[in-house]
Length: 400
Image 1 (cartoon, rainbow, N blue to C red):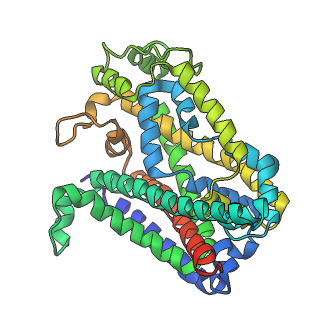
Image 2: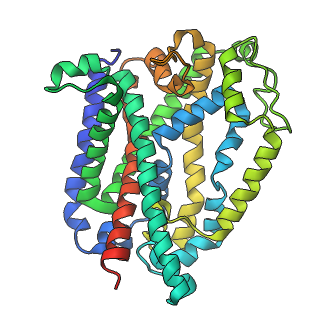
Image 3: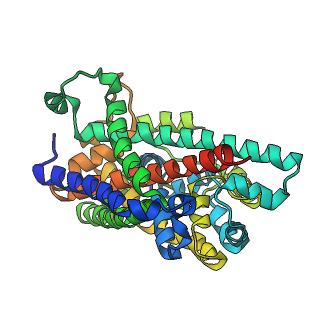
């Protein structure tokens, strides 16, 4: 176990601070439903923008994007277009103003603003509620497994089990870690609602930014451009997608070819075009009923809602990609030092991120970085967990 007492202290201090923020804001959040679910619509747009960006800086997604950057290089920046990344643009231009002026509490309630209260609108409202709740459960499960898998690298069960009065089978250890960290996030969400989410997100994003810059600096100090150029295949450092992927890893890391084949991204240009059209049409169709929409509805007015949406990608991408590419460069240069083999003998490239932290991040900075990545998970979990009760209370329990 590489973590030193100072690293564990930093992580523990962060976890305690999150709960304290929830306790401090509990009274203010408990005034009414608007105060609890939307922060009383009093928060400035830049805080909500930071909070929204923090919620999208999730740990499972970061692990996945480090894997993509390792395998596909700079071109990997196009793959997250699987989601409608243009959503924030359309929100900034007109959707956020429209949403905020409706003065609703959830995305499902907004259906009445868009379509009225006829039979079709009521059916659409029901579908949106079901979609929102299923989406929340799916997203929480995705993050839950990711954080458990991640933390198991740093807190091996062989060490932790000495201090736990019960035994957990090896295959369920990640689930146990997931339960522990989601429980802490749930506590401060339940105590302070949207107010505690935003304030904790601001703290968390500051930690993640410091962590991202630190990793980028470590990568630049340890690895030269010439070293990377000698390792990666031709085209790895090009952003231009091209019709075919054409990355020849055979003589370098042969297992990467298997991963590319399984991903089926060979016809890269066609793949990107399909995602481009999907993203535009999805974004034009309207907002997704998730925590992003809850942040829009929490803004003070329509203008600030538009400014908040426009600020999110600007705030998010710089520190996140500094971290992603920093870890990618370190993993490429010192691949032989990483243990990516699972218990079944297969190579799991998603272990690049936690193993790179274990190998290359110095004492003290490791605790800060782990606190930052835990913050990434807990921010996403908290925002998502806050959205679900809003739909249950407002659109199922209260709605006549």
